[in-house]
Image 1 (cartoon, rainbow, N blue to C red):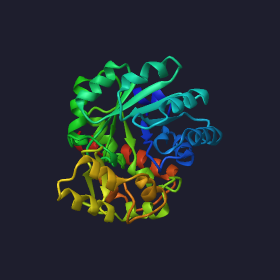
Image 2: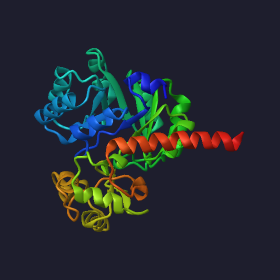
Image 3: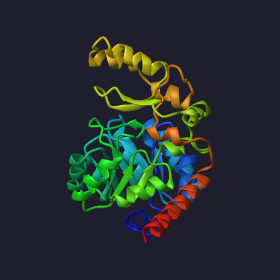
Length: 315
């Protein structure tokens, strides 16, 4: 399975394990890379020295390529970028910020740069900034999301129509069939998050993993658009947010309710009541917790079977 994405990252399959906060530590990233895909560390939930530790452990656990996802809105960004260079990481996915800020700086140091976007407008801005590839993430995705609510099915062909660099689809993808659909629409590869939260190697709390497995259609909702749109499981905290909305809150009132470290409390510490539980709509299709290697094998096998099935049915 060789294409522009496998060549860009030097991986076996055109699949990226998303760098999700509180879920994507060195165990998940190294297991993903060892399975033939690109593993990513989620720097958004790591202090700089914690990130250094995870990079070093990941290097010991795999000899395959891996990268770091860096949300640019987080503090200590300069220190994080310096650590990435010092530790010899060769792939960086940037998000939540202007790609012009760091792309050239990273590329001058031999690093491949991919930027995550949720619209055609920002895909073109990232391409103009010189990034090596784009992740276009649809409204179905977990975690922080686009305000326009453009679905993956719509977003990918619209971005592909105007993009020259490699395109990675994200949002609502957890199976081989979904991967095939995304690639038929024009993607060169896929980024998968939610499915890997429910893996044995994910750093998510066991209680949160079980929430993902138990989730049904309609159990998540995009909210907090005034701050940074985020898709959440409907728990007590989510309900508190909706009650506050009935009063027409100010941005400051929303920030006060959100507080600090609520995502850590939910996903990493397992507080299913007061915690922020970020996950994608596709959680309704995930029914078990498996090792990463088995998840990747299932996706690749289903992709190949679906591709062959369509070929046989059509011709």
